[in-house]
Image (cartoon, rainbow, N blue to C red; front, side):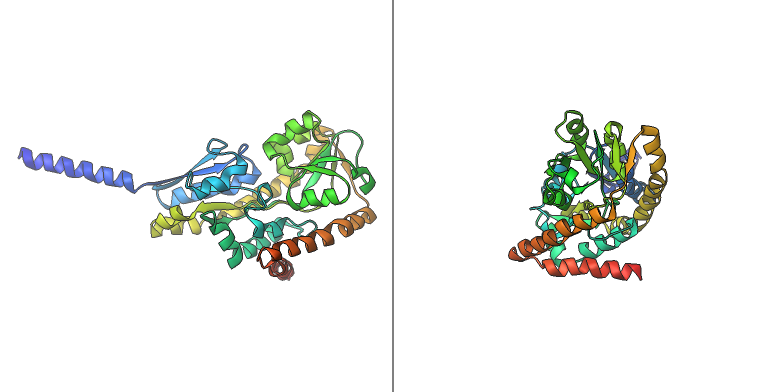
Length: 336
């Protein structure tokens, strides 16, 4: 009887251990703090846990696993299973997706940003590019067009941009350089200190980042309609970790992406709706750039930078013209 009881207890214990082993936990590396930019990751974690009855969980770390510029490296070595990064942080590591950071692409809404990112992410050349880092593209982090906050007198003309020290990365940084500004690519988490210490005069961010990283609190003015472009920030997963998921876990993850993006869009829409109130509350002047100055900015920055990007990427064996055309064709289709 005792032997039977012992066997039953051991069997039960063995089942408990097996159940514990069967549970899957992923570490997710993001940065800053929870904000509109990370709401789709937060929602994804909720949905995956719900769909698997808590057997598959995403543990989101805000800066505790890696620096933001090192997230892709961390994914490549399997230091964590999921991460968010921005293409402009290391253009040489992800050249194909920098097409989405070209200035003045003409993307007008967050929905259009999702559409063009999804199209580019699905391209075989882009998937092969990220595969070099053992990374699988999962979803984008759509952001509106960047605009400047600055200190001192408003800069409302191209002449005023000359020698302006601006925090701007990727294609946006190149656009400002084309009109005589001096871009610096300090990370988002460093932007406030750079502004406070006078390292930069202005910071180019989307609205949520001006709030989340405090740059709006140091601003005297904000450009309402400069809209030089945005950055592209994918969420990726380690390919080996993804392949090791069970079929049900993989289905729970993949099927939750669309709803997570919808949640992100709804949440960001609320932020945009109250942005003018934020400016009034903070005492920040809204600056409108004249249309002739905007047209001149596009002429100086958009065409030359795009053509140079196509030439440089093509020289590396990247189908650059095809990727740029894909963005334009997707935009046209989305607007129909």
